[in-house]
Length: 88
Image (tube, rainbow, N blue to C red; front, side):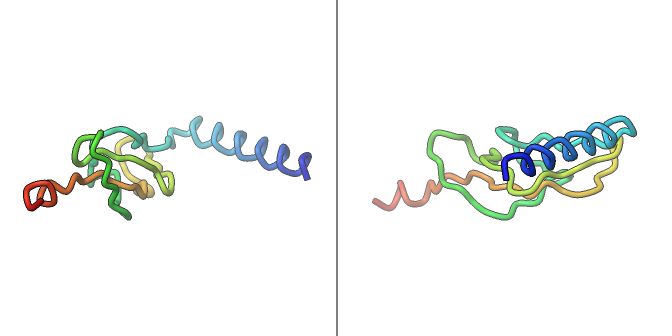
């Protein structure tokens, strides 16, 4: 099972290298402000230590070719619930 996992990892790395060679790159999202041009918010997080609209997790990696989005990154976005604090 370990050899199969290693083999799949090698194929995955080769595939990513080929895509990069032709200009297809992953969309960076983690710990960056949410950008609807490159990302789709799938979930909301409530982490008081991080600012609003900050991406806290990438659920599915997105890809772009030059400046054109091929697949939006599906992300989890932080939203602090300020109304809760005021109503206590």
